[in-house]
Image 1 (tube, rainbow, N blue to C red):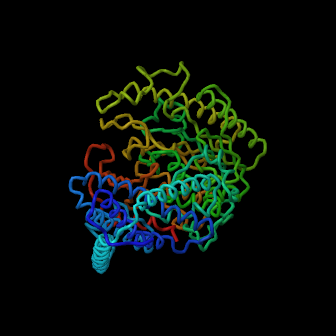
Image 2: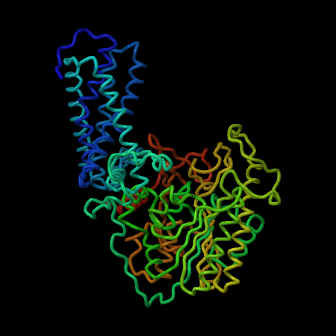
Image 3: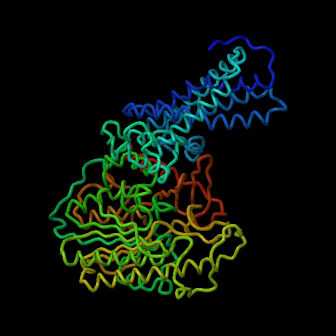
Length: 614
């Protein structure tokens, strides 16, 4: 490709010059991203996928943004080249800082950490020399960008440069995401290994299309085709093989986990959940318990992996190598019979492949509607309990009910709280009265409670209740415009309405009690492993949790996640980290401004979300 001196600019050549600035910046951009990928085993498929991601995901959105900027600057298009150079300088500088930070502490710099790096770098434990180095790097990037700007004005690229760049970026983006859709479904670590290494990378997934079109791809991608080698895995979990003392737990109890979908903290009482309430009177009840997410996968991940949900992407990338969480391995290693009854598509959402690999899973149930399917789920689960009673060996069973999920389903005779009506999101706003919708939800929870009651009654009738740990909780809560901020359902914010959830645990050897200190779903696994399965390892080697009954422990930050964002909860202050911004608000009111966390909590949460990365 030959370049010649450029004649006086017109509209087309001005736009081509901006693309030329982008093109000249790509070695710097890609160099930073490749730095993030150092240590990854570059198999042929991994390299091809990585090249497509770098040429698509990190170029196409940039072209779109700069195209919009160019259109805005049409009246003063002479400024287009300078503006493009400034945008590229910011982009390259961020990627450079992120690559350095990721190499040291395995954390990508989002807007939350960027704010505190600027405001209180010393509080995060960074020396002054780090700031000096960052300043020098900024100067160097600006000098490079100035040189690129000058060079772009002297070169005359061919007229076809613009369509070629756009076509290449679109093709690379399409190829990389199609490849990831199939690899994600097939658990191919050669592709999924890259996800946690790259900043702001949230690749596409599609269960339906992966099954439909995967056979058309011209290379082998069988289930578990590429189990990552230990040397190239992005996650070390657990930090050391867990140690067990069989003498400390010669006869560990059975374990039953019952989950009510979208169950909020104030929907557990004698009126809404009479059966669960009766169970709570002989159980340990944790009234200030937080979920690890405001959506299903993040919540269940916290229960069984006992890790902050920011590890979710890395666990999926390493799922074939990790096999299962320590808690599940402890159960299967002791010969527990295990069965899962869930209507939340554990297979589709990678829950089975990451947390319950090899366990018996039931996801399809008979019935014309959700309530009938939950009845069939209950019948299947009761049958499993009867089989285990006859077998006499230890068992683990999970029942996950769906009726309390939007759009809140129950038979007509359970419409007790009135008025109740279906939610129509199109007509809701901050002034909408939530009462009829909350009543609808409460009716669905009440209906689900009847099935939980059947399970508890069956355990009692089979003489299993006093040999079984029974956990009743949920994946996340549910909002109903509680703070008049127009938040409904879940996955929308991290206030207590979506994150604070019931936790009732009946231990066979422990009397009832109500505990008001703050706990988390990540505390369940270390409590069970240490107290009931003879695990002698430090919980920090396999968990971000602590003992549920440790009311004297120091304050800590809680981590919760959603689909593409996450949040840190410091006491009553929520810091929600979005892809391109952060929000601060109070835990009980999304409209109230949140405060800043103490430096020691920042340093603590940084260590916790980094601990298991290599």
